[in-house]
Image 1 (cartoon, rainbow, N blue to C red):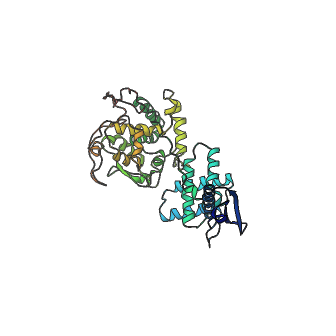
Image 2: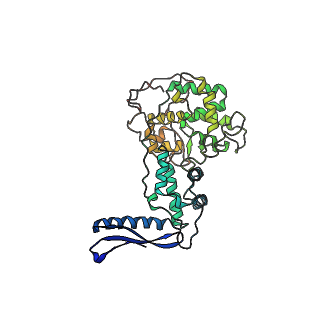
Image 3: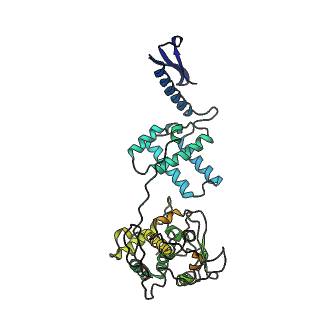
Length: 401
């Protein structure tokens, strides 16, 4: 119910009156007395806004007030069942983040998740609040539209701050990458092949850990990835400039069941992924301890395994491969991800698929003989043209083929 202005024959003094639902019953309320109608109208607008917010925070007629944890579980189940969210890592992340924050703040129902409460939480944690806020808004929209739960409308109108763009990563040099691959092959061909695969194609380490023996087809020379970050199963050829790597894959899959992991861990099993995030933590730790730890010439900020992906994407870009073709290799969906890895903004090749020895259609013939960086590491290197600018805007050293 809205408020109204009451005044003695509209000549003053003026007073704002309204009815408010308190402790299960309606109570008549009144404001202070105002000597001019303008002040009374301002008070009327403020009271109506507060009453609208209180109405939104009450359960709708015929709907029960549900615990916030139950609402979050219902959201996850509904989105996964309907297919609107097909990434289990994202759904689990939303459930984990929102439940943890709710329990820490003492929010038991959706009525407790107000704009003021979120502002107080964000003030206590000034960094890393944009993603949890977006998650809360998604859950609260579902709770309002489907479960008829009370929702503070100001929460859904809260802007989500945009994080500043991440700086371009530091890139490995050809010499550093060659030393990394040599170190990996010294520990065994299965380790060398895995590290070489990351430097050639730029796939995520977690995608590499999911590969099975049956995903490599020696007859067609095609590798099919498991479900990637984009929710697809891309295929790419290991032919032409990747012929040496394809031969290593042939040796890795020889006389092995199709269900076994293509790249094995030191115990002969599959590299373990993090239960919550799906990250290749075991492989990343092994890479740091057994590979880069023994190569002191590599800078500290380039010793993590993600630096191999940065190197691969930059190498593919330097070879003239367009962004859409690189998505086949990396499994990403967005083309904007490559802007951070480019070593230059020179012209892109118009025949990138042919340069890669790739297929012209899904399952088509493969061909081509162009060379990419990182291939045939044992052969003598030849210097190539120096790229003009690095991602940080400094003159780069000569890159080697």
